[in-house]
Length: 238
Image (cartoon, rainbow, N blue to C red; front, side, top):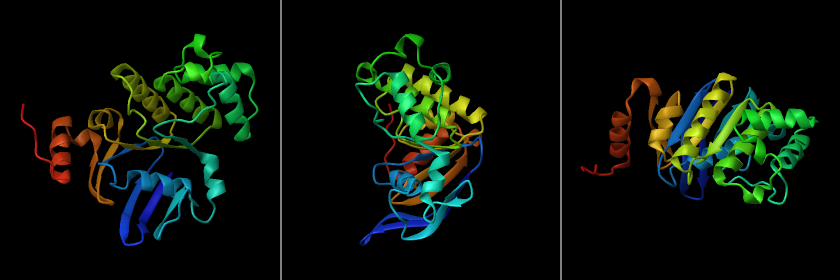
Protein backbone atom coordinates (compact mmCIF):
# COMPACT_ATOMS: atom_id res chain seq x y z
CA UNK A 1 0.00 0.00 0.00
CA UNK A 2 2.90 2.37 0.73
CA UNK A 3 5.90 2.33 -1.60
CA UNK A 4 8.80 4.73 -1.02
CA UNK A 5 11.75 4.66 -3.41
CA UNK A 6 14.96 6.67 -2.81
CA UNK A 7 12.94 9.54 -1.39
CA UNK A 8 15.10 12.60 -0.67
CA UNK A 9 14.18 16.04 0.64
CA UNK A 10 16.64 18.91 0.89
CA UNK A 11 16.16 22.40 2.29
CA UNK A 12 19.08 24.30 0.83
CA UNK A 13 22.17 22.44 1.98
CA UNK A 14 20.30 20.59 4.73
CA UNK A 15 19.26 17.02 3.89
CA UNK A 16 16.06 16.33 5.85
CA UNK A 17 15.52 12.93 4.21
CA UNK A 18 18.23 10.93 2.51
CA UNK A 19 17.25 8.27 -0.08
CA UNK A 20 14.60 6.56 2.01
CA UNK A 21 13.31 3.28 0.58
CA UNK A 22 10.67 1.12 2.26
CA UNK A 23 7.42 -0.70 1.61
CA UNK A 24 4.43 -1.24 3.89
CA UNK A 25 1.91 -3.88 2.89
CA UNK A 26 -1.73 -4.32 3.85
CA UNK A 27 -2.08 -5.17 7.53
CA UNK A 28 1.46 -4.09 8.41
CA UNK A 29 2.38 -1.52 11.07
CA UNK A 30 5.74 0.12 10.43
CA UNK A 31 7.13 2.23 13.27
CA UNK A 32 9.82 4.79 12.53
CA UNK A 33 11.94 5.52 15.60
CA UNK A 34 14.29 8.46 15.89
CA UNK A 35 15.08 11.72 17.64
CA UNK A 36 13.66 15.08 16.60
CA UNK A 37 15.04 16.00 13.17
CA UNK A 38 15.61 12.39 12.17
CA UNK A 39 13.31 12.66 9.14
CA UNK A 40 10.20 10.95 10.49
CA UNK A 41 7.79 13.86 10.12
CA UNK A 42 9.35 14.83 6.78
CA UNK A 43 8.53 11.33 5.52
CA UNK A 44 4.89 11.69 6.59
CA UNK A 45 4.61 15.18 5.10
CA UNK A 46 5.90 13.89 1.77
CA UNK A 47 3.35 11.06 1.78
CA UNK A 48 0.59 13.56 2.55
CA UNK A 49 1.69 15.78 -0.30
CA UNK A 50 2.34 18.68 2.09
CA UNK A 51 5.78 19.10 0.51
CA UNK A 52 7.48 17.83 -2.64
CA UNK A 53 10.57 15.62 -2.76
CA UNK A 54 13.91 16.77 -4.10
CA UNK A 55 14.28 13.36 -5.73
CA UNK A 56 12.82 9.89 -5.53
CA UNK A 57 9.13 9.06 -5.35
CA UNK A 58 6.37 7.64 -3.18
CA UNK A 59 3.05 6.01 -3.96
CA UNK A 60 -0.11 5.14 -2.05
CA UNK A 61 -2.09 2.20 -3.40
CA UNK A 62 0.00 2.38 -6.60
CA UNK A 63 -0.82 6.08 -7.14
CA UNK A 64 2.15 8.45 -7.28
CA UNK A 65 1.84 11.00 -4.49
CA UNK A 66 3.56 13.82 -6.37
CA UNK A 67 1.72 13.27 -9.66
CA UNK A 68 -1.75 12.85 -8.18
CA UNK A 69 -1.87 13.88 -4.51
CA UNK A 70 -5.65 14.41 -4.52
CA UNK A 71 -6.28 10.81 -5.61
CA UNK A 72 -4.03 9.38 -2.90
CA UNK A 73 -5.90 11.28 -0.17
CA UNK A 74 -8.97 9.13 -0.82
CA UNK A 75 -7.09 6.22 0.74
CA UNK A 76 -5.33 8.13 3.54
CA UNK A 77 -6.14 9.02 7.12
CA UNK A 78 -3.76 11.13 9.19
CA UNK A 79 -3.58 11.49 12.96
CA UNK A 80 -0.94 14.02 14.10
CA UNK A 81 0.41 14.48 17.60
CA UNK A 82 -2.28 17.07 18.32
CA UNK A 83 -5.42 16.17 16.39
CA UNK A 84 -7.36 19.23 15.27
CA UNK A 85 -11.10 18.77 15.74
CA UNK A 86 -13.83 21.38 16.18
CA UNK A 87 -13.96 21.95 19.96
CA UNK A 88 -17.49 23.37 20.02
CA UNK A 89 -18.91 20.34 18.18
CA UNK A 90 -19.66 16.96 19.72
CA UNK A 91 -17.88 13.75 18.78
CA UNK A 92 -20.85 12.76 16.61
CA UNK A 93 -20.94 16.15 14.90
CA UNK A 94 -17.20 16.10 14.20
CA UNK A 95 -17.41 12.60 12.75
CA UNK A 96 -20.42 13.57 10.62
CA UNK A 97 -18.61 16.67 9.32
CA UNK A 98 -15.34 14.96 8.42
CA UNK A 99 -17.16 11.99 6.91
CA UNK A 100 -19.06 14.42 4.72
CA UNK A 101 -15.80 15.97 3.52
CA UNK A 102 -14.67 12.46 2.54
CA UNK A 103 -17.88 12.02 0.54
CA UNK A 104 -19.57 9.69 3.04
CA UNK A 105 -23.18 10.32 4.01
CA UNK A 106 -23.73 8.25 7.14
CA UNK A 107 -26.75 7.72 9.35
CA UNK A 108 -26.61 8.53 13.06
CA UNK A 109 -26.48 4.81 13.82
CA UNK A 110 -23.52 4.33 11.47
CA UNK A 111 -21.70 7.26 13.06
CA UNK A 112 -22.29 5.83 16.52
CA UNK A 113 -21.12 2.41 15.39
CA UNK A 114 -17.80 3.86 14.17
CA UNK A 115 -17.27 5.77 17.41
CA UNK A 116 -18.01 2.62 19.39
CA UNK A 117 -15.65 0.59 17.23
CA UNK A 118 -12.94 3.20 17.90
CA UNK A 119 -13.40 2.63 21.62
CA UNK A 120 -15.13 5.87 22.59
CA UNK A 121 -17.56 5.48 25.49
CA UNK A 122 -21.22 5.85 24.54
CA UNK A 123 -21.82 8.66 27.01
CA UNK A 124 -19.16 10.76 25.25
CA UNK A 125 -20.79 10.67 21.81
CA UNK A 126 -22.83 13.84 22.43
CA UNK A 127 -20.22 15.72 24.45
CA UNK A 128 -18.25 18.62 23.01
CA UNK A 129 -14.68 17.88 21.93
CA UNK A 130 -13.50 20.76 24.14
CA UNK A 131 -14.16 18.51 27.15
CA UNK A 132 -12.19 15.55 25.76
CA UNK A 133 -8.81 14.23 26.84
CA UNK A 134 -6.16 13.68 24.18
CA UNK A 135 -6.84 9.94 24.24
CA UNK A 136 -10.53 10.52 23.58
CA UNK A 137 -9.74 12.86 20.68
CA UNK A 138 -7.45 10.20 19.19
CA UNK A 139 -10.35 7.75 19.29
CA UNK A 140 -12.48 10.19 17.31
CA UNK A 141 -9.61 10.38 14.83
CA UNK A 142 -9.63 6.61 14.48
CA UNK A 143 -13.41 6.69 14.01
CA UNK A 144 -12.91 9.21 11.17
CA UNK A 145 -10.41 6.83 9.55
CA UNK A 146 -12.85 3.92 9.89
CA UNK A 147 -15.77 5.93 8.51
CA UNK A 148 -13.64 7.06 5.56
CA UNK A 149 -12.71 3.41 4.90
CA UNK A 150 -9.04 4.46 4.80
CA UNK A 151 -6.54 1.91 3.51
CA UNK A 152 -3.48 3.74 4.85
CA UNK A 153 -3.04 5.36 8.26
CA UNK A 154 -0.26 7.89 8.94
CA UNK A 155 0.50 8.64 12.60
CA UNK A 156 2.90 11.28 13.91
CA UNK A 157 3.70 10.78 17.61
CA UNK A 158 0.13 9.66 18.40
CA UNK A 159 0.93 8.40 21.93
CA UNK A 160 2.91 11.47 23.03
CA UNK A 161 1.34 12.86 26.20
CA UNK A 162 -1.01 9.90 26.72
CA UNK A 163 -1.12 8.20 30.10
CA UNK A 164 -0.25 4.46 30.15
CA UNK A 165 -3.91 3.37 30.03
CA UNK A 166 -4.75 5.60 27.05
CA UNK A 167 -1.53 4.59 25.29
CA UNK A 168 -2.38 0.92 25.75
CA UNK A 169 -5.91 1.48 24.45
CA UNK A 170 -4.48 3.20 21.38
CA UNK A 171 -2.18 0.22 20.80
CA UNK A 172 -5.17 -2.11 20.92
CA UNK A 173 -6.94 0.09 18.37
CA UNK A 174 -3.95 -0.20 16.02
CA UNK A 175 -4.14 -3.98 16.25
CA UNK A 176 -7.83 -3.77 15.34
CA UNK A 177 -6.98 -1.64 12.29
CA UNK A 178 -4.23 -4.11 11.38
CA UNK A 179 -6.79 -6.93 11.35
CA UNK A 180 -8.81 -4.89 8.83
CA UNK A 181 -5.82 -4.82 6.48
CA UNK A 182 -4.98 -1.14 7.02
CA UNK A 183 -1.33 -0.30 6.35
CA UNK A 184 0.05 1.97 9.09
CA UNK A 185 3.15 4.16 9.25
CA UNK A 186 3.78 5.53 12.72
CA UNK A 187 6.50 8.01 13.69
CA UNK A 188 7.32 7.77 17.38
CA UNK A 189 9.90 8.16 20.13
CA UNK A 190 8.23 5.40 22.16
CA UNK A 191 10.35 2.23 21.89
CA UNK A 192 8.03 0.22 24.13
CA UNK A 193 4.87 1.05 22.19
CA UNK A 194 6.66 0.48 18.88
CA UNK A 195 7.69 -3.00 20.01
CA UNK A 196 4.17 -3.70 21.25
CA UNK A 197 2.27 -2.71 18.09
CA UNK A 198 4.66 -2.84 15.13
CA UNK A 199 5.16 -5.61 12.62
CA UNK A 200 8.27 -3.77 11.39
CA UNK A 201 10.55 -1.19 12.99
CA UNK A 202 12.99 1.26 11.43
CA UNK A 203 15.50 3.53 13.17
CA UNK A 204 16.24 6.89 11.55
CA UNK A 205 19.04 9.34 12.19
CA UNK A 206 19.98 12.51 10.32
CA UNK A 207 17.44 11.82 7.60
CA UNK A 208 18.65 8.32 6.85
CA UNK A 209 17.17 4.91 7.68
CA UNK A 210 19.96 3.25 9.67
CA UNK A 211 18.39 -0.01 10.89
CA UNK A 212 15.33 -2.14 10.05
CA UNK A 213 13.84 -5.09 11.90
CA UNK A 214 10.89 -7.45 11.88
CA UNK A 215 9.45 -6.73 15.31
CA UNK A 216 9.15 -10.42 16.27
CA UNK A 217 12.86 -10.90 15.59
CA UNK A 218 14.10 -8.50 18.25
CA UNK A 219 13.38 -8.15 21.97
CA UNK A 220 12.64 -4.84 23.64
CA UNK A 221 16.00 -4.95 25.43
CA UNK A 222 17.81 -5.63 22.15
CA UNK A 223 15.87 -2.86 20.40
CA UNK A 224 16.77 -0.39 23.14
CA UNK A 225 20.45 -1.30 22.88
CA UNK A 226 20.50 -0.98 19.09
CA UNK A 227 18.61 2.32 19.27
CA UNK A 228 20.99 3.82 21.83
CA UNK A 229 24.02 2.69 19.84
CA UNK A 230 22.56 4.06 16.60
CA UNK A 231 21.83 7.40 18.25
CA UNK A 232 25.32 7.39 19.83
CA UNK A 233 23.73 7.70 23.25
CA UNK A 234 25.48 6.29 26.30
CA UNK A 235 23.49 3.58 28.01
CA UNK A 236 22.32 4.49 31.48
CA UNK A 237 22.89 1.72 33.99
CA UNK A 238 20.61 1.76 37.02
